[in-house]
Length: 120
Image 1 (cartoon, rainbow, N blue to C red):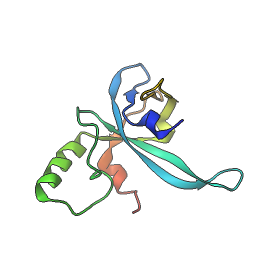
Image 2 (image 1 turned 180 degrees about the vertical axis):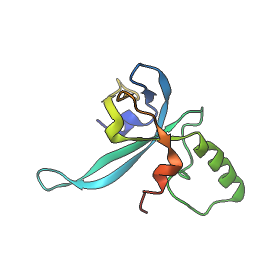
Image 3 (image 1 turned 180 degrees about the horizontal axis):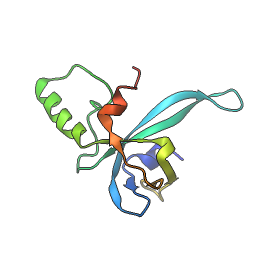
C-alpha cells in the first residue's frame, strides 16, 4: 500500500459510519526483519471538515503569520488522531484514495494530545 492510497481516504467506524477523511500520516523510521531501514505508519490525522490539509501546522509548533496561526488552530480543533494500532483495515483504492476501517469501539483522540508525544 502507498501513502497516496491513504491521503484523502474516507475513515469509517466499525459499523460503516463515515467519520472523516485522512488528511495526513505520521511515519517513523524502523528496521524490518532483514535489517533494512523502512518507514512505518504510526498513525493518521483525520479531518472532519471540508479542509483536507492543515497547512502542516498540525505537526509541531512552527513560526507562522499570526492570521494563519489562528486559522490553523481552528482547523486543528476539529482534527483527530488515530493510532495505526486502531486501524482494522486499510484497503487500497482503485486509482484513487482507499478506505480506512477502524477497529470496534475506537474513538479518535484529539490531535493536540498526540502532538505532545511527537518528537521533532
